[in-house]
Every structure is written in structure tokens, then in C-alpha cells.
Image 1 (cartoon, rainbow, N blue to C red):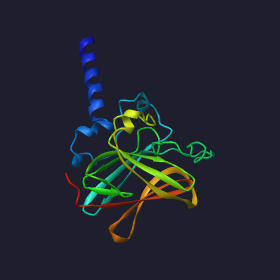
Image 2: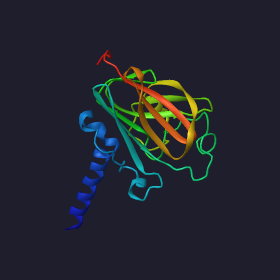
Image 3: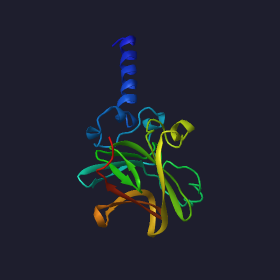
Image 4: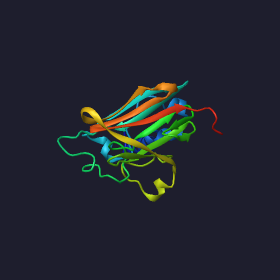
Amino acid sequence: MNKKVVLAVAAVGLALGVLVGVSGVAYVPVSLALGPCLRDWTSPSSYGTRASPLASTTFRAGSGTVRVCYGRPAARGRTVFGGLVPFGRLWRTGANEPTRLYTNTDLSIAGIRIPRGRYALYTVPGPDEWDVRLSRSILHWGNDISPAVQSREIGHAEVPSDSSNSYVESFTIRTAPAPGGEVHLIVEWEWTRVVIPVRQVSDLAQ
């Protein structure tokens, strides 16, 4: 294989990484983007061993399916909230790529109404409540939450912050059923537990 062919293959690989990598699923129908969470191959950090592995949780919201993809850092003896993750500062809600939410149905998330699609889920942690924010910007890395990223925000809402019944070493996002057809998206790390209510809605204008 000559040098030109190698360079062409590398260029195609890079283009595919941008287009089809984790963030690149923005170019694929949502119904096809609910498969395994992929790394964002546009970042050099994706080509080495990660201290915070990529994880996901998938759940049903009414007749629809929702998948949340997130980086899973560990506490490792550190003070997390109010320390490693400062209070009052916008956070990617995990590690590495921004926490991404894919839904093939219209949703209400903490009262924020969103049509089916792809979103980044950011939070502003506080000692008593968290500000939950949803953005259409998923094409960037981690906590690079620039004014351009923030301009694509579509809504925010506050939810209470509570204490966990047991210590959680690695950042975790899981779900639990709730009354009235809701699903609770539960964010846990260290001694902190935050519940974000999620439900399917059917009256959003498309």
C-alpha cells in the first residue's frame, strides 16, 4: 500500500470518526442511535485507556425508549461535590464526553419538555438542589461549555439534592419506576443522590 493510499485511508477514517463517532450520531436517525454508546473518536483522549469508563442506562418512557450515555469517574477518596465538582458551576454530569441523552419519543425531563432527539444533559450542583439543563449541543468534548454551547440550551429546571443511603464510589446514573407512569432518573455519587423525573408526553408540536 503506497503512501497516498495510506493517507487517503487515514483521512477517511478521521472523517468517519467525526461523522459516526459518539457525537456524530447526530447525523443518524434517532431510531438508529439507541444502540451501544460509542466513544467520541474526534478527541485524542478516546485513543488511550480511560480512567472513567463509558457507561449507559436504557429505559422505557411510555411507549418510547431513552438511552443515557455518560462517563463514570470514581471518587478515589476525594471530596466530590463542593470539591472535585464545585457547587454553582456548570458540569458535564460525568466525565469525558458530555452526558448524552437519546430519545425516540417526546419527553418531559424535570418539567423541561423536549421533542424526540439528541441532547446533552448538564447540571449545576448545589448543596440543596441541582439545576438540570438540556442542550442540543452534543458535538464537543467534556466541560468545554462555551457560550456557543450554552446558546443551544433549550431549558433548565431545579430538582432537590438528597443524601444517598450508602456510599457510591463511582458516578452512577440509573432508573427506578415512579407513580403515574413516570420514571426516576437517579444520579448518585459519593453521599449525594439526585432524582430527575422523566415521563413521556404526547402534545408537543413537531
